[in-house]
Structures are given as C-alpha cells and as structure tokens.
Image (cartoon, rainbow, N blue to C red; front, side, top):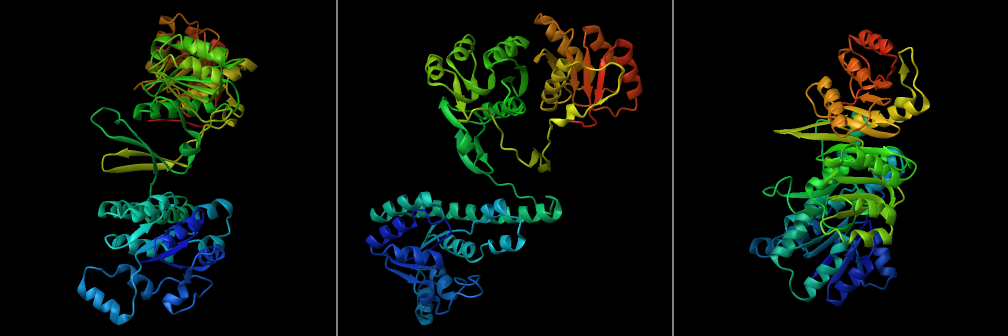
Length: 510
C-alpha cells in the first residue's frame, strides 16, 4: 500500500507518517513535506521518483502528472483499469493526505497580489478531488484531526466504505470552501465584493437540539473561528433561538467598548439596557425597563459576572446569561438554577466577530449587502438643528438610545434616561405607533420618561411623534433627518424646547 503525503500544515504529519510506516505503508512525499519526514527518519520517496519528472516552475508543477493521478484514479476492481495501469507502469496510490496552501493566512498577512497568487494551490485541490472521486479505493485525508482515526481504522481493518465516504465528503467540503474563499477574495478586491456569484460557507460548530421549532433541524456554523475561540459553554445547551437572541444582545452590549453595559433581550428584541457605575447597578436598572418581558430572557453582560451580580440575577428566571466571563463563585451560585444556560467569551469584555457582509434568506435565494456599522462618531458628529442644545448627560443618553435603536427591528423608537433604557417600541408598521407603544409600556411599568432622550433609527415623517415625546417630557431627540417635513419637525422641537439632532445616517433593520 502506498500513501502520498503533501501538506502545508505540517502539524502531526511526522507522527502520521510513522504510524503508516509501522503498518507497512510506503510513503511518497513532495518538497517541504518530504524534507520534514526525511529529517525525522521516515523512509520516504520523493515525488520526482514517481513522476519521473522534476518539480518545476518554482514548485508550481510537481504532482500534475499521470503517474500521480493515474495511481489515484484507476479503479482497483476494474480489470481494464488494472491492465492499463500495468501497461503504463502506473503504481496505485491508496491514501492521499493533503492540506492546501495557506491562502486565508496569506490574505490576512499581506496585500501583495503576487504573493497572494502564489499561495493559490493547484496541485493540492486536484489530488484531493481525484482521491475523493475514487474514495472506494483511496483514503483521502484533509484534516489533521483525522490522522489518529485513520491510523486506528487501518490498524483494526475498519476503513469501511462508510468511513471512506465521510472522508470523501469532508474532502469536497474542503476544496469547495477553499475555492469559494479565493473567488470571494477576488471579487472583494476587484468588484467591491459583488461578483456574479456569492459563496457563503461556514464550518459547523455544533448541532442545536432543533431549529426555531421542534420540527425543524438546526446547527451553528461559523465563517472563521470566532465561535470556536470565543463561545464557551459553561452550563446548559444553546438552542437555535438562544443563539439568535445572544447575537442581538451581545451586539448591543459590546457596542459600548469597555463600559459596564447590560442588555436584556426577549425574542430578539431588547427589553432592558443600562450603563451605570458597575455591572450590578447596570443590571438592576436594565431590569426595571420591562421585568415582565425579562422573565425567561437572555442577558448579555459586558464584563465579568461576580457573586454579587449572580445573587441578584438568581432572583428571577433567566434562560441565558452570556458574559465576558464568570467568577468561580458566580458559577457556583448559578448551579442551583437547573434551567439556566451560561456562556462566556473568556475575556474581560464582550466582542463580536465584525463580519464585513450581511445576508438574509428570501424564498428562492438571498439578498446580500455590506454589513451595517453604527459608529461612535454618529452621535458625536450629529448636527444640532434646534435652538436648544443637549446637556452632557442627554448626549450620553442619546448615544445609548441611538445604538439600541439602530440594532433593533424597525420601526423602532427608544427612550433613555440617566443611561438606562426606560421605554422601547420596536417592529411596528408605524413610527408613531412605536413611539406611543413605548410610552404606554413605560407608564404600565411606572417608569418616569420625563427628562429622557429619544432616538429613532429613521426619520420622523411628521411632527406628531415630536409632540407626543414633548407631552411625555422628552428633552432631547436624535434621528437621521431627511424627511421632506424636517422643517416641521424642527419647528415642533423648538416649540417644546427639545434639543434635536440629525445624524444623516439611517439604520433600518428588517
């Protein structure tokens, strides 16, 4: 039996080759892999001896050869194939171990296009596809994590058709993701990311018990390694719905840098948010906004949960807490809550992956766009259009309201007072209804909105929302502006003595 080993990532390759050697396999290798194996004492044949042709063109051509691909692709159980292989002097290659040139690492490290081009693998994907196509006769290994299982299967003679088939599927996934990454990069570089085709690929992190509903299947996939690196399950199991709620809560809580922000989300919508002197005070104030909706909700804590905060959070039923981290004392206190799920990023504060693109499924396809960014300078650079100016605290409240509104389903209106959200209306067909619904909810909760700042993620088309805000005691408003009736809105703000700011940027979220 003969194995061809040609890898870019050489971790574990010596041990894998030694294991094959112990099992009586002949080892053939290329370039750098050959040198590593030979230095480690592995009996290895260089690829030139198989191809009868030297590597050439700076290594661009080394395995693109009929002695290689004939050895991989001929059918062992086909008499005509065996006869032709014998006539051509082609010896079988029964295992191919390949991982590809590090294109991703290269584009992350440099913008040198010549170097990037040289790190597009040609021979590697070709060998992988050849071996995968002939998986009934050839083992194809593309993942270093499979070295041990493959050796074990060979040793126990358990390299069944089903085992080989799984390696084949993984191999085609590997080359598909690789080619998709190259195509996307080229389109990003030359077509601003919008080519004739858009390739979206992700690696499975874990299955969820089901999707949004029990009759649906679900799983979490990642584009890079964000979740593998920064999503640690400490207690419980994340469901499909948990993950979408966590995403919304973390995006809001993490958008304030290292400030002690706490965001509470229910069914994808924020029902509480605050930034106070510490996380305990922030959670306490965030909970006041809508403690009824917070029951069974998801809480994102932009910091480390300690025992004192854990005690307070244990006072009601929460389904999920996601935080930068948890102290051992906090984890111990949470053990009494059987249905509570805990997830940590294992860092002092929360962060997001910062994807450059966004897409949504629609029946028959998907719509694709560059990712929205609610930048810190949007409030700082907002234009004062009213006679009245906001105070320092009102500007802070506007910043919070603006970011929460921009990360919440449209139409959305958010009221913030003393750095805590006191009312929110979201997902409404009318912006006026969103504003009024928020105020009605605040009244039901006994929350005083007077003195609050208000934000809308899109412009107010009429002055009626300003009049309603004034009646509730709102002192500052931030919105994009851009309505044909902006002058009426500004006039209303001046009549009521409200500080009004236009950002010039809309943040619809549908």
